Image (tube, rainbow, N blue to C red; front, top):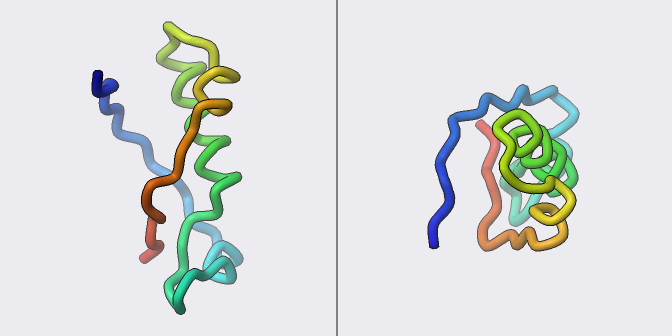
Length: 64
């Protein structure tokens, strides 16, 4: 069952651009997990710990 989509802005400090995959700057996974936990805490319904424990990264989020 697909989950709800909640728009969420992620600030991108310059040092994030040091995290690269195949010469493309990507969002570090630990940052993505922190933001995921924050969204879950704000919009509730389930435990952020369970969401993070079950997280899978099927693709990388390229940075502008």
